Image (cartoon, rainbow, N blue to C red; front, top):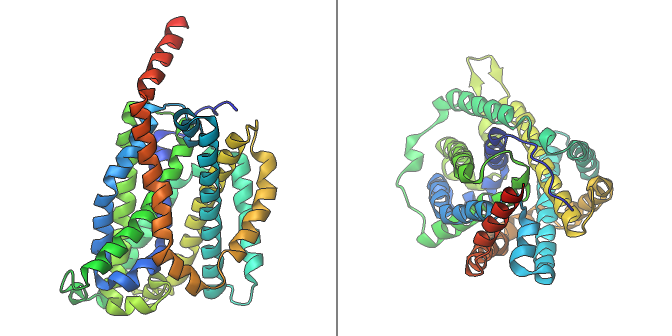
Length: 375
C-alpha cells in the first residue's frame, strides 16, 4: 500500500497533539488518589521524564521520512518480525480506542444521560466518529485549533469563576506524599496519556512538513498540552484539596461550585459538552490510526471498508474489556502503565537503536538522493 499524500498542515499537527492531551481530563482519577495534592507536581515531573522518549519519536520520524510506524517496523525488523510487532501495535491502538470510548460512555451515562443504556451512548458516538474517519485525517484534525482555543478559554473562565473557593494552603507542604507514590503517579502520567503520543508516528507521512522541522511543532504541541493538564489538576487541588481523592471526576465536581457574577451557574454542563467534543476528537484520531494501521498491515488500498466492521468490534470490546469502573481504575493504576511502557517507550527506543546499528537512516538518505538525482 502506498503512503498517502500529505493532507494536514504543521499547525494542525501541533494542535492535534495538544488537543489529544487536553482530552485526557478524566484520567486524573488514575493518579490523583495516589499523589493527592502533589498531583500537579507529578504532571510536571512526568513532562520532563518523557522528553527523552519524545526525542526518540522525533528521531524515528526524521530517520524514516514518508514512512509510518508500520512501514518503519518492516524496514527495521524485517517482514515477519515487523508484521508481528505491527500486529501487536494494532491491538494497542484498538484497545486505546475502546478504553476511551468506554470512558466517554461511563461519563455521559453517569453525569448527563442517567437512564440511557451505555451501549446506546457508545454506539451512537462511535458511528459519529466513524463518519469523521471516513472523511479522512484532514477532517479529523481540522478543528483541533478551535478545540484547543475553546477549551483554554473555558479553563481560564472557570479558574476565575472558582477563585473564591481556592485555597493555596491545599498545596502545602509540597511533596508530602511518600516518594513511592510520586514515582508511581509519574509512571501513570508518563504512559497515560503522554506516552500515547506514539500514535502520531502513524500519521507523520501525511503531515506537510520537512523532517528537520518536526521538533518545532511536536514539542510545542506537547508542552502546551502538558501545561493545560497541569492547570486543570492545580485548579482542582486548589478547590478540593485532599477530597480530590474521593471523586471519580474531580473537574466535574469542581465546576459544580462555579457561580460567575451570579449569572453563569452550572458550568459543569459546559464542561461536559466540552469534554464530549474533546473525546470526539481523541476517539476519532485513535480510530483513524487503528484503521490506517490495519490497512497497511494487510496491504489494503483503502481502510474505508474496514470502518463499520471495526466500529462494531470496538463497541463490543469497550463493553467487555472491564467488568466495572473499579476494575478499570485498578488496571489503570497498577497494570496498564507497565504494559503501555513497552509500546510507547521501549519498542520505539529499541527500533531507533537497531535502525542506527544497521545504518538504515543513512541508507534511506542515500536512496532518496539517488531518486532525486535520477528525477
